[in-house]
Length: 150
Image (cartoon, rainbow, N blue to C red; front, side, top):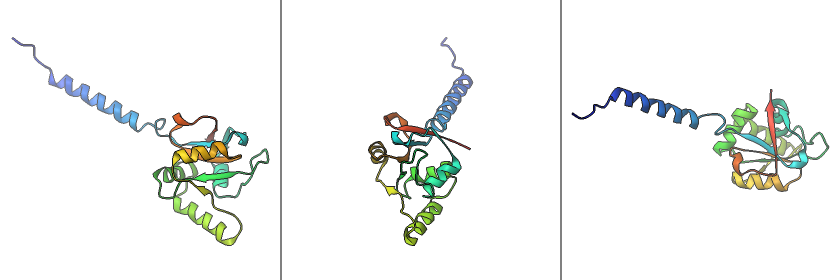
């Protein structure tokens, strides 16, 4: 006689493995957006309000007096859209309207747009007072990681 296979146990095991994979893939730690700045910014935390003021170009200097240089990805970029919704708690079109209003009125300039995340990281590293956002911290070194609180 051959040993019998308990299909019920095998199905339960498969379901648990599937659930574990789904949890890992959609865990906030895996794909969390991180705010980074050039080391000259000398800031370790910001409130959501402060971050929103920086990205709406209303706060233009760090606490140490260094001018803030804002870098972003294109409005259609999924990471930019996720950043707007999760960190700024705004829709991307709302941020675009703010930037267009500032630019066309002559009261400010829009952030500097870069093509991809690696360009953004390089720009942050090489620009005094720069701020930006990334999704993958594993390749990021020599920058400030800024915690966002309420």
